[in-house]
Length: 398
Ligand SMILES: Cc1cc2nc3c(=O)[nH]c(=O)nc-3n(C[C@H](O)[C@H](O)[C@H](O)COP(=O)(O)OP(=O)(O)OC[C@H]3O[C@@H](n4cnc5c(N)ncnc54)[C@H](O)[C@@H]3O)c2cc1C
Image (cartoon, rainbow, N blue to C red; front, side, top):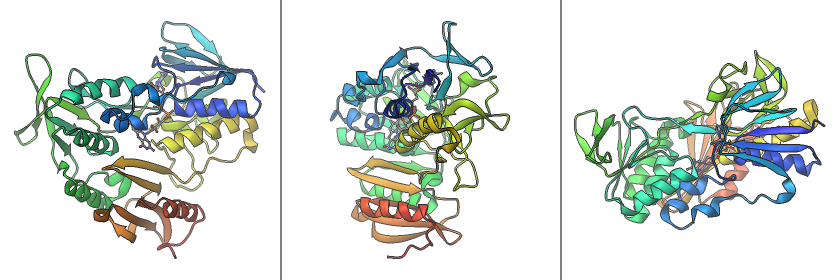
């Protein structure tokens, strides 16, 4: 097996790939390049227990046993890739040669016009972001969260737990519509309001009004009104971190395009020994018509492992065909979703309701079960994941 493996992106997908390579006896070098100065850490707690103070930022660091034998290049960004020579370029100009490369650079927050990051204006992706936001939340008297996606709603729940008066502004009429569909998105919105979240939808944001110290005083809305805010969190989605690959010849299309075994495509053809995993990868999933990119924890774990297996087994590796899964912690309970809510899919409530903090909903399209969401129904959600993978009919039986 080739002896020099380079992983760009020192986080979940990259770490899982490194672990899998070692578990399967790879004894060459593994170099992990990360533009953050931290060892890999877990991001989900950053919008939850780290913000509320129930967990310390350092507790999020993943255990990395010395036996993994990773050479760390931290606090350095990859700035370019030369596929012909098998090298990546680092900021500062030096280069790193590889026999096998894993691209695992994740995603970065989309920056909103008129609300660039600055004092009192936060985007939440990194540990440093969470530390800065936590410090502001501890003294905040008015928080505005722009964007009612998962991160925005989780931040709002954490702020509510801290007793910070919070307003959530969402531009679309229904939050989370792309992920959950319109009906369930509306039910989640109603559930948040019933729990005391001041969630305002269909609200355009014009920009921020700042004080003489440069900190926000209010958020200016499209209708000319303002909402007071000494702290603002913008959560309007992320974009795959592919800037460093510009001009490298790799196919970029809302992420790094990959084949079904996570090999990177260039001009539509897989590049031997160059793979991608995690939030940055958009791969040909055997079960879906369109290539898929998933911005969730379990996919980062599983795709990191799958990419390593492709490195080891090549064409004999299984195609990467997971049933997507994610969770989100809101108002003290865990929402869990499996599959993908296709646009226009039908839904059936199988158990409970959001009001009861206990619910199970199935999604169907063209007579097939395609997704399910639940609160306090983990075993049934996982059973439905199995049925989705098996191509079960909708509505599900039993
Ligand atoms: C606050 C927060 C809460 C979340 N909560 C949940 C949750 O509850 N449930 C769930 O399923 N998922 C959750 N997620 C999503 C989950 O954490 C991500 O899907 C996962 O971290 C993706 O892992 P990754 O390794 O692909 O990328 P990332 O974790 O984004 O890591 C990529 C790394 O590469 C680095 N990098 C980028 N460009 C370069 C470059 N040019 N050179 C070197 N390094 C580079 C980045 O700085 C980063 O350190 C959450 C994410 C966040 C931010």
